[in-house]
Image 1 (cartoon, rainbow, N blue to C red):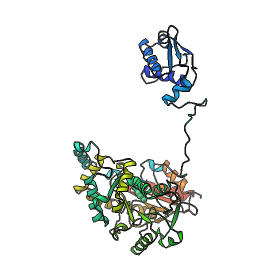
Image 2 (cartoon, protein in one colour):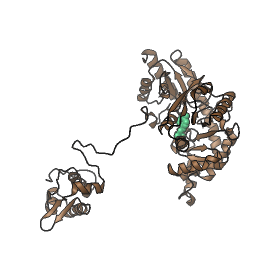
Image 3 (tube, protein in one colour):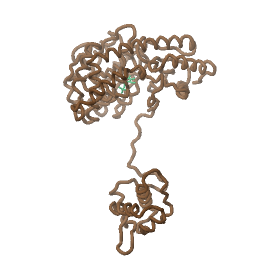
Image 4 (tube, rainbow, N blue to C red):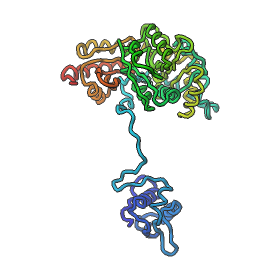
Length: 479
Ligand SMILES: Cc1ncc(COP(=O)(O)O)c(C=O)c1O
C-alpha cells in the first residue's frame, strides 16, 4: 500500500510523509478502513526514524484521517470521506485532478491585459525610476521608521500631516479648493475610482466615460454592472457638445487637463460648459488629474474642481507619476458632505493606507523636496519629449503621425497598422507601449502606439525608434 511514497523533496521528512499520506487518504487511493503499516515497518521501509513516523501518525490521528483499533493497528478513518474532509475544508479532487470549487463568476471585462505588470522603457505612465532621489528618500524613510507613532493604527482617511501637505500643494499648484479634511488618501488613483463607485453608484445608474480613455477607469466604472456610455472626443478632448444628446448620467469620468491617451486640453469655455451640464443634470464629474505636473511650456490649466465653490467634482490625483507607482498612494478630494461616506467606504475597502509610506511622503513634501523633484522631472521629461519627437520626425516620417501636446509622459504615434501586434513585437525586444486601439471601447478604433517616453533613456529612445523604422519601413504591419 505504501510503496508509492517518495521522500525526496526539499521539505523536512516529517512534512513530506504527512502530506503524501494525507493526500492519498483524501483522494481515496487509501480507502476508508484500510490498514496502515506499523510505524516500525514504515520506518524500516522508508529508511527514516520511527520517531518521525510516530509523529506523522499522531498528527493524522489528531486530525481524524486515521483511527487506531487497540491490538489491531492503525486504519484510515471509516467516516473520512463524508465527515472529516468537510471539517478540514480541503478541496476534494476529481479523478482528473480538478478541484471542485464553488461557482466561479464570469470575468466582467474581456480586455484586461497584464502588459502593465512589468516596468519596461516606454511603458505608459511609468516615470524615470533612475531619476528618483532614492538617497534623500531613504534618509526620510529611516527617520520615520524609528517613530513608534507609526507602528500602530491610524485613520482610514489618511495620515493628517500628509493630507495637510496635499491640500496645501493642491491649493497652490492646482488651484483646487480644499481643506485637509476633504482629502482622502487612497491606494493609488485606482482605489479612489473604486471608492467613487462604492459611494455614488446605485444599480442601474448610468455612467459616462471618455472614448478613447483610461482603461483603469473604464474597468472601475463597469465593475458594478452599471451601463457605461462612451462619450467621443473632438480634437483630442471630451466632446462636451455631444453630452446633451446622451441623456442623464450619475457619473462622468474625464481627464480635462491632459486627455488620456490623446493628450488634448479642455479649454476654459469647454470646462464651463461641462460643469454647467453636470449641474443641470445632477451628474458627478470625476476629474482625473493624473499628470498635470508635466506641462512643459505653459503653466497647466488649473483644476476644474477649483473653478467655483461647490462644483460637483470628485478630484483624483496620484503619486504614481510624480514619485513612484510602487508607493501605491493616491488621493481624492471630495465635497464636505461626502467626506464621511468616503471615509466609511475606505474603512471597508482596505482600511488605512500604509502609514510609514504616508509619513515619508509627508516629510518629503514638507521639506520642499517634492516640489524640487517635480521641477527636475519636468525639465527631464521635456528634454526626453523633444528628443523623442525629433527622432520620430527624422526616422518615422510618413509611417506614423505623432499626436502631441507639450505635456505629459507619453506620446501617441498614430498609424495604419496592427497596433496589437506591433506592441507585442516591441515587448519581445524589451520595450513597453500600449496599442492605441485598446483604449477605445466599441467599434471604429483608431490604431497607433501609446509610448511612455518618461521611462526611456536617450539611448533607449533612439534604439526603439530605429526598431520601429525597421519594422514599419520594411514590412508593413498589416491591419
Ligand atoms: C489616466 C491615469 N489616471 C491615473 C493613473 C494612476 O493610477 P494609479 O495611481 O492607480 O497608479 C494612471 C496611471 O497610469 C493614468 O494613466
